[in-house]
Image (cartoon, rainbow, N blue to C red; front, side, top):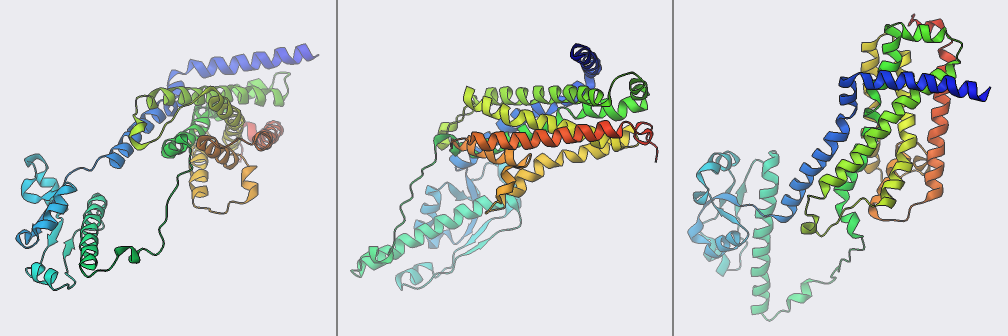
Length: 392
């Protein structure tokens, strides 16, 4: 009896896998996230390191340069240059940004008199491209004025240390891996999305697609239980999702190896332990995502509606971790639920913190229990003509 049941399931699974791999375009779409994620992580990491390390030239329109030569020198030391020095190929860009600094003619007299000097910095603060240059200009001017203020106090015989009542000494206790948290956060998000997106085309085709082709009706006429039919479809879609997750992990590890993270004092590597822990976390999510997609697709009346409805599920792995970032005091039950639980454990894993295996096991168990409940619910609904024939 057990051998007979297994042979039936193997036959169903073989049929699902054959149909899944036969559609080349669907498979290319399924693996799209696995290929795109490493490329996005590589590109964004390069930009992040460039902004963190490099101080590109800023070209500032300054009126009254002759009144404050030392201030101009301080700006030049921080690579903040006069607009007249801008290269011809960048002149249009910096002219549109129109960063203007106005130095009053009374600068020297006010400086000698110990008065407050009003320097006007004009810029479009709503323009995102101006935020970083404006911040650098303000910091440079503030540092310059602070140095002048300290010198004034020293001339008057006042110890400048009196101005600093409390000094904070920062000690970074993070591990080298956690310094690359932006890369880790992106990878965690892309892994969750890969688990949901990779099996998506297969799940839709195995449910709404087979119903439109009348394959599902013929399959249900066979002496096979609906639980086996749903389980075979689930295993097929979940296998594709697992392949997508593995590809994302391997290609990301390969692409990050070309990024010099030492420039920001960070390191990032996916060792055997990390990969094993990530797979233990994500395999239950692959099954849960495929079960959820199959369930929603079976409720749809046609293939197009199934595509629209199931595509909305992709927002879950993107929205849940982002929303959790803005929650300071996270409720304990978030650690037990699918997606949120895996996201929190992945965050600790990437930070190099000890992994709670009991919490990982419990979260995975809850995810699998919810998957089984979805399978049983689908199997029960497939016994109804309303679902099979998509009747209203």
